[in-house]
Image (tube, rainbow, N blue to C red; front, side):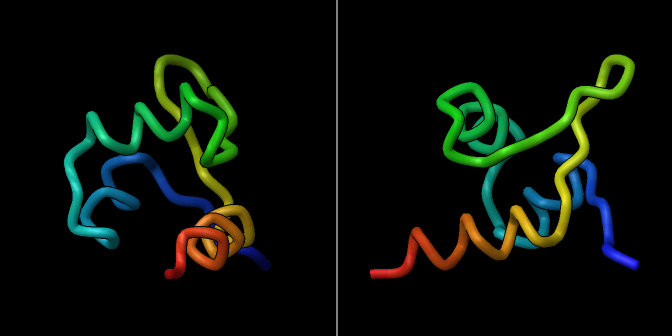
Length: 55
C-alpha cells in the first residue's frame, strides 16, 4: 500500500515552506489530489517529482 501525504508532511520532508509546496502544485510540477479543503500527495508522485528535480 502506498503512503499518502498532506502538504504539511511533504513540506517537512523536503524542508521547504507550505507556500512552496502549494506553488509546485499550482504550477502542476507536483501532482496532488484535492480532498475537501486540503491536498493529498501520493508517495509515487513525490518520488517522481524528486527524481525530476535532481541536478
